[in-house]
Amino acid sequence: MTKFTDLNLNPKVLKAIEEAGYETPTPIQEGAIPPALEGRDVLGIAQTGTGKTASFTLPMITMLARGRARARMPRSLVLCPTRELAAQVAENFDTYAKHVKLTKALLIGGVSFKEQDALIDRGVDVLIATPGRLLDHFERGKLLLTGVQVMVVDEADRMLDMGFIPDIERIFSLTPFTRQTLFFSATMAPEIERITDTFLSAPARIEVARQATASETIEQGVVKFKASRRDREGSEKRKVLRKLIDAEGDNCTNAIIFCNRKTDVDICAKSLKKYGYDAAAIHGDLDQSQRTKTLDGFRDGSLRLLVASDVAARGLDVPNVSHVFNFDVPGHPEDYVHRIGRTGRAGREGKAITICIPRDEKALDAIEKLIQKEIPRLDNPVKREAKPEPETEAETKAPKPEKKRSRGKKPGEVKSRGRDRRDDGGKAVVGMGDHLPSFIALSFEERRAG
Ligand code: AMP
Image (cartoon, rainbow, N blue to C red; front, side, top):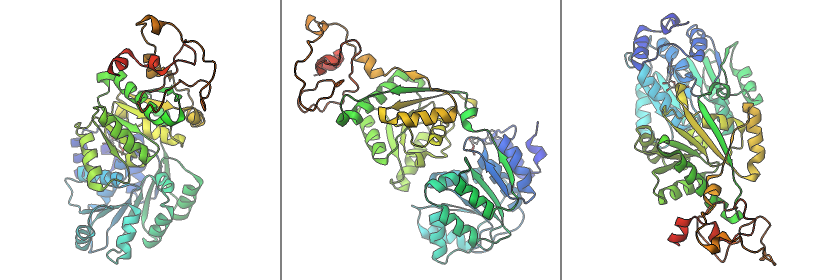
């Protein structure tokens, strides 16, 4: 088995690795570090959780340990799709370069230009940036990219999703032709292939197993759910979510709840808070200090539930996430793999539960096709709860079928009276027919509460 000491890394880097507690290199590290140290271009097809960050930071630190940076001319450049990912890469540099004298700067939105300019002026060995912010600095004439010896593109497939590919191409063209490129992507879409064909020179290609096949420690489940009425879908779905969280009890130490839309991230977090859950939202429209505060809280265990969009949570490295809940089925099947990969990290156990409404069935099929297995179906906890214990004679009697349907009511709907705004979940009651008055569909407790 390959050891870190076989990889020709700087002894000071090896010391930091040992202190981090890593025993053996992961497959992407074993595959990418040797060619990177030889100065070759690398094409790594790997996703987060595989140890890919160290597979480029460790050789970079080794290579950059020799030499010095000049003012405004960074010696290396790491491009990341999101601020969170960039901040995480910066943390990795801090960890692995703690015994090596290297300077770095993080160029991300939400941080003042002045501070960042001052750092660049002094000269940096490593510049970690999101593409837009990097180009902003460049346009302002504060930065020269002609001294870049190593350029890393991290999570290129996400860059593609976010429309950053033209920026990446521009940045490539601003760096010297002789630079070394380390390029990482979880998947190889045709557009990514085109970029790597254009800008990489005879790269060493290292592909590691998709997380979908690797994450055997994640228990998965899907709850099919149909709202009683379209206009109640959101509130009923949130109730299903709460019941799913409750059903996990103390096993759910912390969880990431994914929504497809930013507005739902906000609504979901607010609703959970209203019901007394310890939850906070994270998505791209929140300001940087808020995002950092929320993430720090989630990392240190003071926040239990993080409600997130895909982009905000992409690449987040929190090792101990017990649960992932998909409030929505993701539209891209790869995102499902990324999402559930936030739990069950480093061989730990994890659980991922997805709520699927009828119009998401197609997306669910696509996921099962990608992961090549059927996700076990779970009972809808709200439906289960909705079977009332017989209490009074009136409640044990099934109501007579209605002669006339109320206007606009479709078959299979639970009858509701007036402007009922309760957040009262999927109430189709098994074995009682479709025509159940809504008060019977309430649990005993809810009826008492009115
Ligand atoms: P990444 O894929 O870069 O997001 O890394 C995933 C996680 O694996 C991070 O928490 C790293 O600290 C950790 N890690 C990276 N390399 C190793 C290694 N060789 N052994 C154990 N853990 C590692």
